[in-house]
Length: 215
Image (cartoon, rainbow, N blue to C red; front, side, top):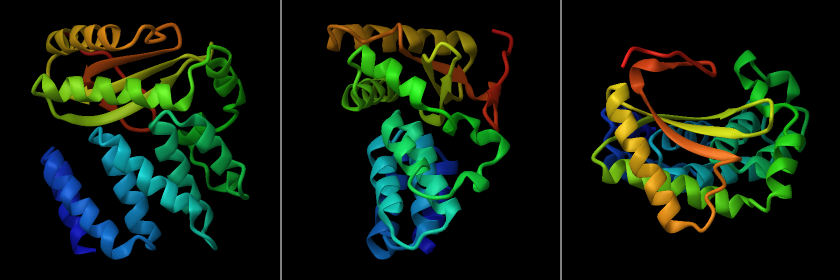
């Protein structure tokens, strides 16, 4: 528990490296504890440490004799890592619909979203690679990721939002760097299906919404 508290402090300070060390220490000592796994997965995701978030979420989803809120936390993290198929499987692995909150609507009816990506051949590995490159580009630009969120649209496309503590105009510069990195690395980054953008942390609002701020 102490390591998880230290990981949370590192998260609040946007100290990604220290967060990873503390979260991994917590995992090593308590990889059977759903509270540790769920919180560590959520925090890792919001810092852009996607690999860790997925590791913790998969461990959480694989636990036997779990409760609905535990599996819901795993599904949220997997969805946040663009692993929509795995999130959907977790949602249908047990009777957890009753645990959904108002902000969990994105976890309902994912079949059309998944089919859209499958038709275009954009598999989970490709989505993860795109996400990780966008995340590393932001960090290489000298900015700490403070929050993340995939936003799904009615046409079954996704805009993946990273929140950093910068102005809108500075975020625009980072967005150019992300676009250039993706087009340099991938023959097709599939922008018609998924895009990656930075937004100012000041525009972040919990529960699945955000608002525009002046540039």
